[in-house]
Image 1: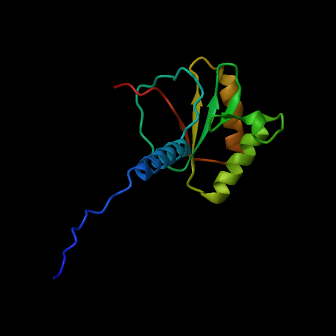
Image 2: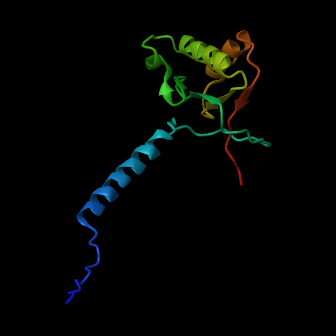
Length: 141
């Protein structure tokens, strides 16, 4: 006489599922930080007309009310350890042009920034003969 064994359904260990979910959560949080964009708190100037540019291949030069320069949200003085912010920006523009000649420079200045602070950056870009420069203004709906 043959005896039949009862087949039990396979058990899925549920305690490993919580570990997988936790690791997935950590991975998503780390990936979200990679695309983090640093910004300087400024009051954007207004313009009568504006044109959108692509968000790819941009080098952002921020100028706050006191005239401090930032390169992609990082203070330009501390970027290379030197005290001359214009020299840091000059090196960054040169590197950006060598790596990708179609890089657009965005100048983002507070609307209360004295023009002499903006003028120094514009003179540097003029000496470097950089032609793809945009001023970022407030977007009015």
